[in-house]
Image (cartoon, rainbow, N blue to C red; front, side, top):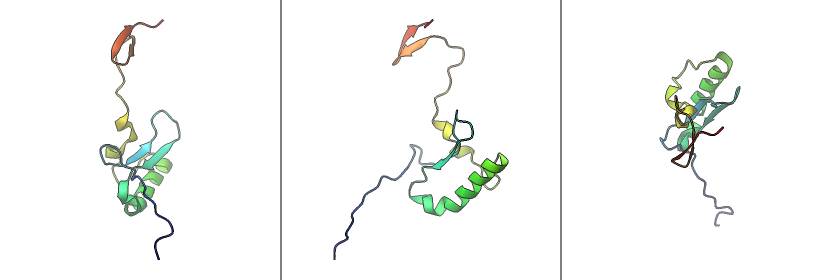
Length: 95
């Protein structure tokens, strides 16, 4: 008998193939643990432990979460620059 359901899913995988685990930048009290690709079920126990430590204690002790920081995909802030851009073209000061 053929299967009654056929399904195809996208695997959640960030561009660098590392999961995103940690505080959500700019959103107080929000955390994420996602993008584990096909390893999510295998990494679930340590991910849950690390995230619980981070949320309850302020840092994960069981694993170093720095390589998985969601902020690694945030653009670097422009320091010492004023004005605005439209695409890549500077359009000057906006008062």
